[in-house]
Image 1 (cartoon, rainbow, N blue to C red):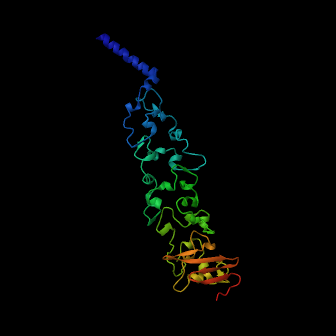
Image 2 (cartoon, one colour):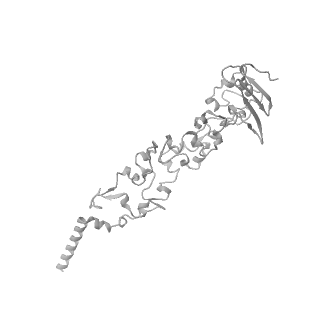
Length: 334
């Protein structure tokens, strides 16, 4: 019996020596899942985890694992670990980073072993986004941008890195025209903010108390008595004097001599014209954003034929005869 126990002790010592002196042999037979069970709990697994290739990310620093803290580490520093494989995720040509990406905190959004969401996300957008971004700033408005209402933040924003601020997928109006009809930026005359790619001069991007996500009210009535605050959106940029001054030689080019024809239109008794009755707020095939057919009368749209000259112009429209005007010398239209 004493000889048996002696042989058993010798075998144990030999096994210990082999584990210490020939660690590669011991590890080759060892599987992390022998101890680390339940790493895959979601329907989407990180490919190295699914393949049992833990050493793609982890490495043993000493033979004291698992008895000694710090005996395991990562193959590269933690903040650079994901980029060790995902080399095409970031590029020097895109200077704006999502904050967690810039800080190397990929696990702020992604699980590292498995998830129930694609791309190993911790939650589905927009709930994932609202973990950091204040939801009240994006939802709850009377009118909500459709991608926001549908929780599709990534329709407009890149999740990792972008060429422009706010991680936008494209700059300025190029972003808007990814979804909206390009006719809004095409024509002989184009509204200044659209021409410069600044749709946000007039529109809020996430939600607004006003229809069409407008920054201020823009009346839809065809006729509305003019007051300085009757068309607040237009007068964010345009000087209200171009409409209010009955006589002028400076505030508007739409005049017959010094008679302000804007003032004539908006001050018609009982039928003060709205800005939108004549002008397209985006673009038109005619000069001065003049509609070819003004909407608003049911199935009939008012035809407008506008011709610009060096010193004035003429207008043939469905609601009155052809009128001509000249800024230098008033024309008699009787």
